[in-house]
Length: 219
Image (cartoon, rainbow, N blue to C red; front, side, top):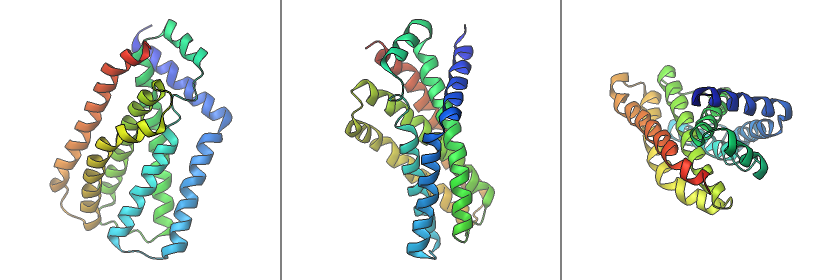
């Protein structure tokens, strides 16, 4: 089989397994909804800057909870079986695609619940939606790569935090700036630079994952 066929089968397998259990995705959705509700009970109403910051904090920690288990849920025997029949590039690419789908769904639910609970102050809804989608893809690609490294290092959560910190901080800065432009309703041409930076981060992260993961896969 080609790599694309392998990726398709692995993504389909992850979707089927998640659909059968639903425990993980339901737990994450409960976390998002309950966090939004707690924020509403604590603040009732917030200004634009706090509204934006709270949303990205909620989405960041939801993505960590959703993606950190990407490789730990795979048993050693299953990974050994994968090692004999498929390429490591297909494994990491399938994980990135699956986690991206999960994050896209999660982010849209979080954005909808957050907008309903709090008054939505966004001036340019389309641009803010683009920021949320690009942020979801970026979180998925970064945390999938870091989760793979952490899993091969004994599932060390401290290592995952250390490795993701240098990438997540610049990513959050760009996302907050882009979403702030959407909140104030600035001309979309002004935000093209931030959009290109986010796309570049995603391309670089996926490329590094494809190059690095085969060496981790051999251990």
